[in-house]
Amino acid sequence: MGTEGRQTRGSQTGLRVLPRGGCQKLISEKIIKQESLNKQMEIHSIRMGPLTDCFLVKGDQAVLLVDAGFPRHEKRFHRRLEELGFQPTDIKLIVVTHGHADHVGSLRALKRRTKARVAIHRREGPLIRHGVITVPPAVTAWGRFLSVLFRFLSFLGRFEPVEPEILIDREISLREFGIQGRVIPTPGHTAGSVSVVLRGGEAFVGDLAVNAFPLNMGLGIPAVAENIQEIYASWEKILRAGATMIYPAHGKPFPADRLRDKLVRISYQEDRKSNNPRRERKDNDFKHCP
Ligand SMILES: [Zn+2]
Ligand SMILES: [Zn+2]
Image (cartoon, rainbow, N blue to C red; front, side, top):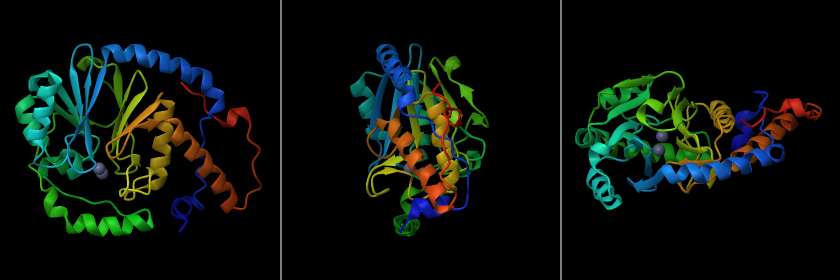
């Protein structure tokens, strides 16, 4: 079906891919740093619906929550929070990766209990302010089936509106919230998607990449998305931001190198499909790891 290839054909985006081998030394240094940082920074995933996780990040001064899962999962969340030894009011900030119902469904209830501020991209703010359910178009043949199914089941995603305090329109640091990391706009799945990238290399990407059947046939792009080229550009962006481990909202975490490998493959497919003579790649064709 050539789904990924068909989307990239003729676009000639000039994808520049971070080299894998060339950064090996830097990456292994990062892993050591990551371990030491993780002693101060705890990460917990909390199941908030079928195949859907949100993430709790405990920094040295505060606790951050990334996403708020499907509707009606607040009781489950608070049970798990208690098991982990946190108070609801320990959470000072909830970053929402995008405004889909499986990420904001329980947001109103969690905000009420935690009294945390909510941050979302400016473009997605109206969705949560008015409780609007949207389903992006399919980008794969499988996605066409899922898109119809999601629309059919959209009544299950009805969520209470939430007024966000922080509207993101560019990269922001989380230092003032006691977290060593930043929020980066990573459009593609939706125009207002964001990712949280910690200083240790952990990247919470929402639906920028998925790693779970049936949302895709494995690790890769989400089967529904607004702009597939933007997804690839955002993959590059988080790699450049130092991501070493990807935490998708749907599916198991995986090493960021898997995205780098996919970008290399896509870049070669573009050359082949456009019938361009194979470009000889030179070192300065590639960006370097941070
Ligand atoms: Zn989504
Ligand atoms: Zn999702």
